[in-house]
Length: 229
Length: 228
Image: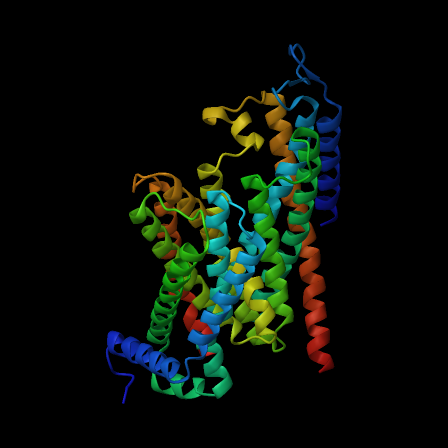
């Protein structure tokens, strides 16, 4: 665990350093230079933080739904602890995604919020997390709470693809992924791609590390609360 | 007398008949929903005065009305079972899935009737409400209503088990039905602007797949709510 933490720390520091310090130039002559993406320029740097955050918030949701299904099959309270911990962490990453995206939108589109389909979908993900915890707090008994929360997570999981994948394709979006990714062609050069995927891997590892810590805390809290009764 | 050994369709029909006759006896949901519609419509009328509003606003307002009508009426089917304590009897005498479908059928028909009344009233009292393609408009309303009723039914079943039902119901439902609402508002707007009946074909596809997805998920999870 110690070695894992050290590697993760060095890894993420390196990613942050590269993402912030590598120059963005028009003509690439050296290996450490990023190309200019039209319409993004220096703002392209948020790519290395915002996209991994959005990715981890979806990972958190998927993990939560996975353990929700496991809970309904097994009825082991530990699966519910795993599910709700993943959702709690997903909520944190989702809030960070909204925040970074909104700051970027201010400088690219001129306002913090303008209901772009991508903004709508992240907003709804935020609402789902909120509703999930509102439902949990409205039920007292542990088993019932776990069952209802699991059912809600599954229903939300079924409707989420409509917002994530269907809506942005019906309604025009100004979000850069269609700009960068016109006809599926990525205009990042290989250095940029390496940093980007390193960042993605680093943030995912960070998520699972915090997740394991949160899980330990949640298990202890559950033990304490059931012992106190 | 309905037995557990009876066929799926017979139990579904029996649950539906039970809910319908108990509704017709008290007319609670019907009256409440009708008055709710009347109140909201008059508020809209007062605030509009004689201003002409664009088509998108009409489509949006119509669905706001239908959404909140659904939120105020559709959770009742499950909540009354809990409140009257009849849920135990229902659990003893039937199996879970047909109960869900009986109640789903009841909610779909209730919301369809409500949407029909609401839309007719809306088009009568609000000036500037015009539909270019009647077929497309009816398809949008029908698909939207069925989808909304399906989502409301499963969330209603969920909410009946929790405390603070009244406030929690729209909170839980809104994120679930938002993809549906956004799509159906677009489809309705298109129907009010474009005379071709198949102009909103993409939206219909999304609506149909939404209805299929939410019902499949409900079918899979309802048993767990019911057994609890």
